Image (tube, rainbow, N blue to C red; front, top):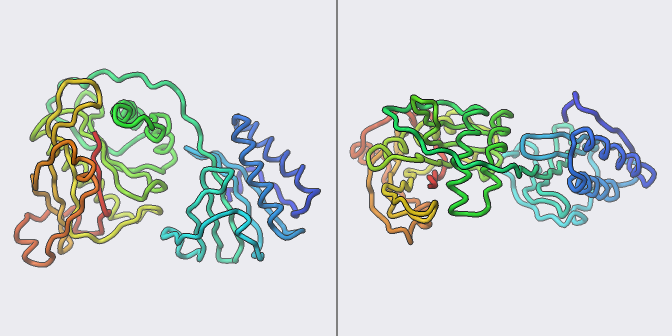
Length: 348
């Protein structure tokens, strides 16, 4: 819990419920949340207080995060009937030390987790997604450029990147809420998003590869947004290599990494000027080898028609490890210090 934020301490019983509802209502009012969000949080809190044994000491806190509103309830170790929440148990790789982990939302909120700390206290966290519904204007075409440089994301650059991503994804999938510029900027400001962007000499974002640890635990790449042939391949390789290096060197909480000999990236190499999002002629596969602790790039491995792009996005292959594998590719030291993620996707 954040000690700098208001806390409510109560003992669970029916008399305490009105005080609990009033506290949550006031916090939601202070955060200027819509009534529907406040109501969801109140329902979750009421369900916990009624499920706990009577007179259990309970601490409550409502906190605003970059992309969600979080309700945290802390209580001493108790015998709780978890079936009351209608939850399914699943091991959580991120919280091995806690001994407990849940990865399924309750019926009232979007996310729910249960942890146990060193003192065996239970921490129940309920989260409701913030709604980012501001209109996103269509970005102007990228200007001609001579070169680009790789930079770390900032709230401003991720907002510009998100503007292009939003309309790229919109042409392919109507569900664009995760790529709203305001959301990506807020996550970056809070330190929940990391990766690398390609910035041209004019200051425009021309490509991106980034990871949001709390979502999917996979490294994802988006871009390059323009270019053809050699330029596109070179940028895709640059973005993937640098972002994968950051994932491997820093074991960010929530990033699930696995040891694979080969990671494949599907990169579109030809585009036609037709309706936005309607054309993906073919893709080219680039294979990132990590055998023996070294990384390298080779391609194309093969070409696939548009109908197989979904298969290619999730494709994984294995390559022989040891000296034979190292001899057939040139070593690049970006992967020499660490593990890599289990897959990287480039979406256009």
